[in-house]
Length: 264
Image 1 (cartoon, rainbow, N blue to C red):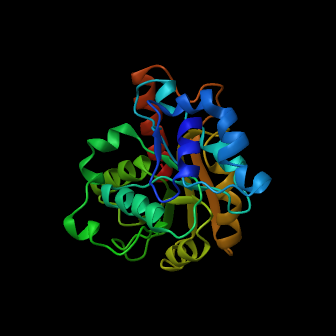
Image 2: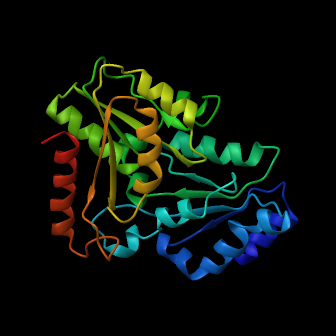
């Protein structure tokens, strides 16, 4: 990662990406993240467009598949120093990388990329999607009319929730994808929430345990923007490990998580 950071400094016109085998591989380069990627601009005025691709998702494959530590990058984010994203479709990923390459200024980009989405048909995109003009920081829900509950989430869990909604034929739940966690997309999120004024509940849904993930970053923003609507969260119980090591336990946790998201 240190080499790629230096390369991005010497060749700012290049799109430089460092991809971890799993998200936890970045833990071994945490000094580079802390001292250079997150703080280089504030300390020395050094700009970098380095992209970190960190596989991270809850797929029943054990803790190391789920330990990119979203919460740590959000703790390092301030003064518009880095971008933290989790694109939910192939086209969104394409537009995100294109945006990174085409922008006139350079900021590091952290991308969380669940491996199972490589095979997830719901995450695939049409040619028209790839022809869209830009990356969407927030994807609103245009498929339901007057939901009573709005689920806000990122990445893979959103696809699982959409599949469950189709299975239940539940039109009372809207699902909003937060594609960029930092900088916070204020206008886009407000517009997505205002699109469904009859919804009385806003629910942040995350796969991570209660002491991890984007929970502490997202909830204050949602509560500020919700006006008089209730804002609650659905997540796994606080844990010392990012995820269980048992595939069967994972399936039980995932089912419970989705049931709670739908108000069961």
